[in-house]
Amino acid sequence: MSTNLPDLDMATLGGGCFWCLEAVYSELNGVLKVESGYAGGTKKNPTYEEVCSDETGHAEVVQVTYDPMIITYRDILQIFFTVHDPTTPNRQGADIGTQYRSVIFYHDENQKSIAQEVIKEIENSKIWGRHIVTELVPFVKFFKAEEYHQNYFKNNPYQPYCQAVVAPKVAKFRKQYFDRLKKKVEVTTT
Image (cartoon, rainbow, N blue to C red; front, side):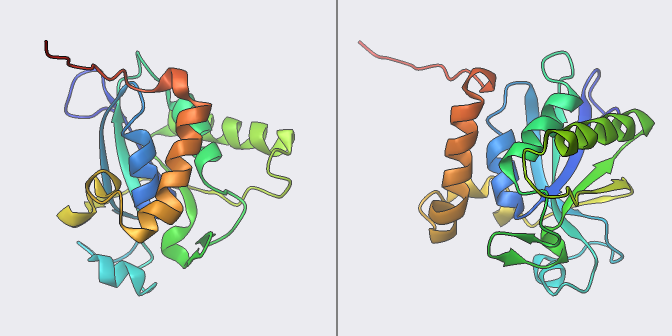
């Protein structure tokens, strides 16, 4: 799936609270933009409160814009399956509801095929010890979440949920994918 920018692609993924996925993908080399939002439901322009009511059918998702010359869709999915539990339907840890389901919204048949391959590889590896329940659904529409949800972990690192849930996932990701992180340039003054 092409974006408005030349030679960039997009992935839309749901794996629990979007704050966790956004925090992880924002640090990944080759990712240019990550937006938190909603997909897969029936209501146009849903609010966070409406999605949390579990009545709109939307999942909390991130829309990841990336450079496929730096990182592949397969890479993005492999990371996806290491930073959330794809074996629990409608749940991630203490977060319960259909909005927290594990779901891949594929943008074209190539993404669908790659996702099917990755899911099969993970199932066959028995890495999770249980059946993968991640939904594979055609992408229809993304609704950007309210502004206060964007860059939530970066802007609220000491918020209790961020400390208890997001920070450990980000730390695990950084350790496992250290070589895939964006290079940070340190500025020193003399």
